Image (cartoon, rainbow, N blue to C red):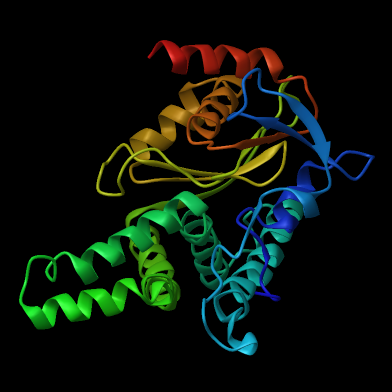
Length: 277
């Protein structure tokens, strides 16, 4: 595989919003004891190799998911997020909100752990009914097992419709609130390697949607006015920031991004709480 080797599950344009004057971002490794901290260029973090590349196809087709699904979503989302950071949600149209939800759902679907579960599910659907079956079933199963590209490529071919359908459901269920500004707070927002936060299923009336856009701004969505009032009216802004960061850290697999190392004590405490639980 010569093309599509390095693919970002956290897009570089989003990571750049956490860059310092050195053009690097702070990075804590949750999966390594001691939460080691380093600084890296956005180009060299938040990626895996070939996570949504086709296998066993012509070179021109290897990157079709990235070129036809991810790149259009990312380019439109980058434009929308830039407008949100500059002007808030006042200038957003319904199409912009749609791109934002598409981007949020794509962040979940392109995550390596999520992609693995999608591929495992596809494998189960293709093989479970054949196991222990007739002689013809056995031959079909042998063929499938001998062509691993089938088990990888088929779910990837459906990734675009899966993202689109999921975004449509979420946008229908949730009310987009807009940008929440945390400027002036002592702490800053963190970014997870699984950046989009959805506290529960979209059918839950208490569900909250959040996506950090920068160290000082995030977009939020709610299902009910009561939850919106509670989080934006009743809870102090600094506490809301902490709640978002707690959710980000809880769903982090490997990397949690920061402006600098100042969140160390906060993250150490959350990690100890996870270990105890």
